[in-house]
Image (cartoon, rainbow, N blue to C red; front, top):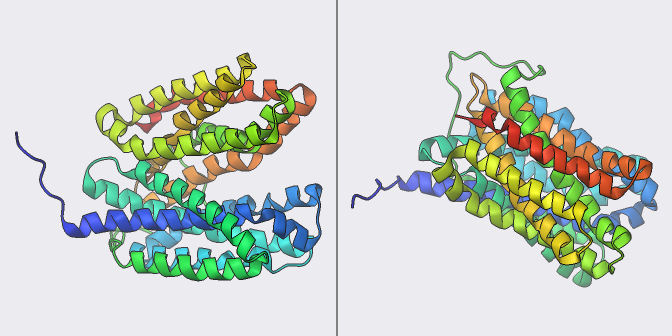
Length: 383
């Protein structure tokens, strides 16, 4: 039996380094998310003000992402990723500084802009790594992001006991994560676009192909945001189970999604991206229907786990597909990311609005319809 040719050590190191960068990005976001209650208390705002403030990171990311395509074209990708991930680590301290809601909103716009720029750059580098590997590695990268988020939130839970003031925690986390990311960045691949390709415009509407790919990502990100923000409320308020069970539901969803991402590359290599997303969409649809058609808590928690498994590989495959659209893959990734992440920005509000007009059960029917549409539209991800 013949063995596959051994990959160059430089490429294997680049894959590991890219995974570390993804994990650091996730850890920054997990660290911030775990400290949101402290941030709200520090600025003296309630749920209403906090809900406004938490719209700002997504807004900052949406504004900054169109600029990232131009940066990817202009600068060496290895250097760009190292700089932007370090900037994002440093941006972690911003939410701890303001003492008013207005200043917090401004700080979170900056935090979100740094997150969006780093997100596009590291995904563009992951596309380069995947092209040179000649097989799927993108899902594993996003699995590293999910693992980083879990590690960041778990470390924050420990830090809350040791250092109640988040300013101390954020400074320490910034230093540690930035050192890890910059050190790993030395193993990234140098990459510049072909010199004859003109720079993309700073702002431009996505092409029809990018729009179609982004809409598939929109369905997945909408389902993810809905499950993360509303699954606990659904289990606690609609089904009447204790808060501990509600928290377990969120944890089950998150762990299922992270685990599926690490297994996703194996599936993609054997089934291809289109078949994988179709199977994933069927899995997520079955899970969403399980949530709305039964009140059995085991089946409901299992339904949210199936949603997590079903949507896990979709966003990585969306980025990979967008990165194959030239001549400016960075701009294509930014366009698809903007469409997909935009749905994550509005999903909690839409789910809440539908719940106010009818019920939270009807809201998750909408989620079921969207993941079913994701199944139908999987063909746009064909290489």
